[in-house]
Image (cartoon, rainbow, N blue to C red):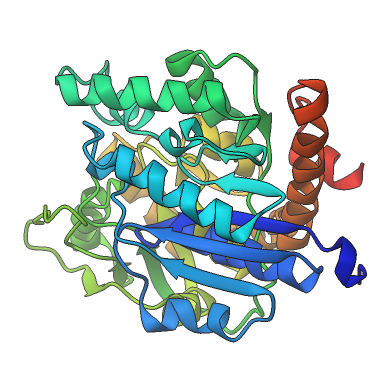
Length: 381
């Protein structure tokens, strides 16, 4: 443990709408254990009591909840000036050594400390994957301009996969190439498996492509359970045709991991998934993975999962039928997934970010971008 006088102060933003909360809260706890003081600023909808409890109990973590809008829910930037003023005031009060932003546009604020930006996803890359081309409405052009300005203003930026990094570079043309830092989780203890196909995600998000699983459930002998919220933060919802799939709604992370420990198969036929923390958790819990054949999943899970065209419902159904029927194949994929999940540990991710924080502090003086290295190289440096 580092002495109190040398413990760095970190100001980190987060939101509780999706996987960013799991990423930020888990990373904050790991950094605090290593001696960091972490001031976590929450934008968007308020986290649940269960989501906040581990942070409230942790030493050296302070949580500040705001009513500031998330950039994808405020693409015109109507709340941006207020957000920058509020965040600047928080920085003056907290006096952090490093700012870690988990969104784009706020990086353009009047920061005194160096800024590391993590690009978890973006509307334009989502649009490319789900609908093709680019959004035509002016509000998304404003969103793009704000995101590009944030990337240009940040001291350095990272993405959780090479696939997303290349998309960000293609769309926003940031002045430095960025780096890759894989996300990570803590170990999950295995359990006895049951004949169950599990899926999880935002059911309202067409990127998750859960409709193909809802349709496949009508033809499968095994039960299909699809967990996740039906209503989005902006009030939109998504309806599904009659299906045999069980849809229990949004589960707490504890309950979802309990489901993963029981499920024999985890399916994620997503059209867009920049990383997929739920997939990693399912792999660590010993599920055989059926994933869409998209760049990010190929990068992370090639050789440790069954990859299938997400836009071919017959292929998805046939692949699930084969995995349900073939015990040997299923067990081989379960073992391969658990082995691969060890590569994406929270300890390794935290070490990579500690290295990144050191780099941006040094870069502030030397004006050098964060070196273009993947997480495993950063973690071993």
